[in-house]
Image 1 (spheres, rainbow, N blue to C red):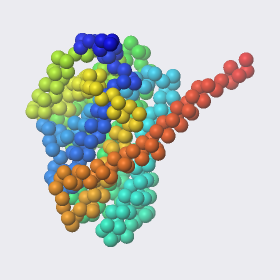
Image 2 (image 1 turned 30 degrees about the horizontal axis):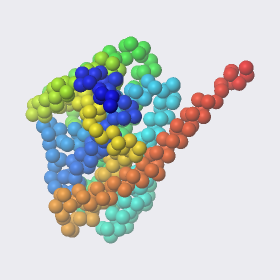
Image 3 (image 1 turned 90 degrees about the vertical axis):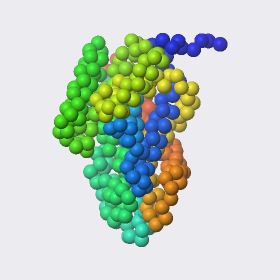
Image 4 (image 1 turned 90 degrees about the horizontal axis):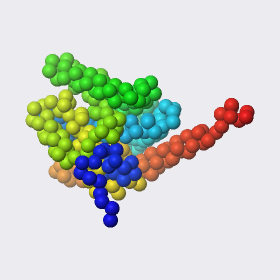
Length: 363
């Protein structure tokens, strides 16, 4: 039997794009987000806190760190920025639009039927139209979610998608205009600037946590951390001692309340280490339902909360009912929307790249 990768091997030599545990990790992060949201949506109290962040915030940070690594690889492996943009938009936009439509034409009307309030179809379609640009400008649908523990928001998880698209835009532009030998240093500088802005916010409390720019800077910092690891993957040692140091740094940040300031590189390094070392490569290798779990969890939780207004149940029962409904929704999203869109995009790009230019055709 061939020997496995040495514990001191470099990241580029150990990480295989086809054989890693990142899909399993993203699935776990999506489940953590659903678990975290269960407290406020189900009426069980505030999200569990780990230091200065709740469980959901920790998971979202992990999502963006992983995305930074993978999206940087995607851009550098794309022949043109157009190819990159098509692939990335087809990965997130079809599922995003689909969950808006499913919420407006199925989930929200069912909730109205439960409460006996006539459904406002105009507001439902407005929910789709106003939010289709990825930024959630209409979080509610008139007459729904009025008596639930967390009223007025049908999908509080979708706020991160606009920032994800922004990260795609930033890395797409940077790789296009910055020479490769300067790309890593540019990302480090941008990450440090983001850290400085976050530190200023934390120390002086200059804006609320809901401030659009502040939240964007925080997430971009985690994204840049993952991107830096990809750019320097030939120099990054993959070692258990460094992974333990990263975990210790995260634990310290939890107790000191400085997670948003110091956790970018530790989160990215620890997750990439786990992606290589965990024997979970088969999970999600063919069917990646993590995105579907993430985008459908919140509306399903609101629907279940509506159904249980008169008959509250323990948190584990509530969470079990939510997962029983959300998992099939996530599978349907993958099989009927996300995977077909990605395949169509690959076919489109393949045909376009095989089409000769006018100059070539004239020869």
